[in-house]
Amino acid sequence: MLLVTGVHEEAQEEDLANEFGEFGDPRSIHLNLDRQTGFTKGYALIEYDSRESAEQAIEELNGKDILGQQIEVSWAFLTNPKGEKGGAKGHRKRHN
Image 1: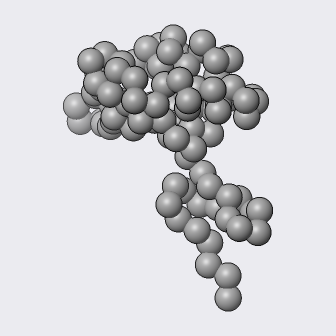
Image 2 (image 1 turned 90 degrees about the vertical axis):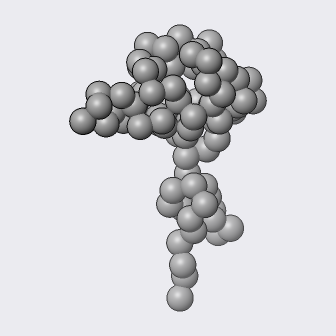
Image 3 (image 1 turned 45 degrees about the vertical axis):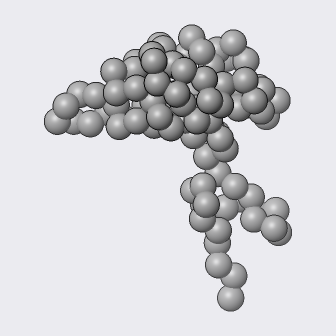
């Protein structure tokens, strides 16, 4: 799953689908909206069926302008040193 930050507040799912669809059909696109304003919160989660599609999207779209705003694209989740899935970006499970 990819984490996309810097998403323009007026972006729609179809804007992201058009850009990220170039690398394979995204399984899901989750774009959080602020209930009070109706605008996006500035980030999205995008899931592909294949790791290769996700890696290519990161390589090609990280730093690209979408709707006049530069986005950052990275992995949403990390793997800890033992190979177990970790939590959100930058967080690691503690082992006692």
